[in-house]
Image (cartoon, rainbow, N blue to C red; front, side, top):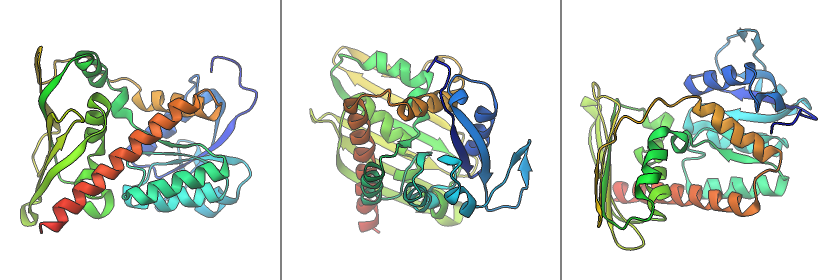
Length: 296
């Protein structure tokens, strides 16, 4: 990616909330990967006109324009599937913020569509580019897990927009799968007090070696965004996360990965392994949702 680009891919950003605004910033600034990308405009349901010189364009124009070759889908999760399908059918490459979809079958279908069209479909996972994850990866390598837990707390999220908690919290599930391999579901419960905007999802998982892992998502007004983890190994324990530094430019690092895919710099083996991990996490999220909903 250090070479001078022979061509630039025209990009449109769909949705200009938190993630979309960061994407616009990274595309406007001069970075190694941005040199391969040409920001054409952004799509939003709000009438914004322009943002710092970047023009708003209609969804129809973004889909039909020959100039637009890439779509960054940064809208709320409930709209991802529809946008991905439209842009893939229009012959565009797609980068989408996680979760790609709110169902495993839909994600599988979209991946097949991307392969039919010969287009890159990339699901962002900035949580795997964080300093905390790099630290954990080093800590767990070669160790035998006895049991573990991961608790995440935060303020409430609207399920209609962001999906069931197993989907909106899929980055935590992705951490566990990336650290300990494919997991199986033992049980899942959801405690809700809608009048208080309180939610607690408790998921019991198992590694291939039958080691138990508990994943809890707890959300309510006033709850601070925080991660509490505890991993017990045969050779010792890891309780909570030390301060391992600031996460810098994680969305830009994700863009670098996406551009490498556009340039064909990932092997088929690497792409297949990533696809398998993403689909496994979405499958687990859907199974968790089914378990919780069957108990209501």
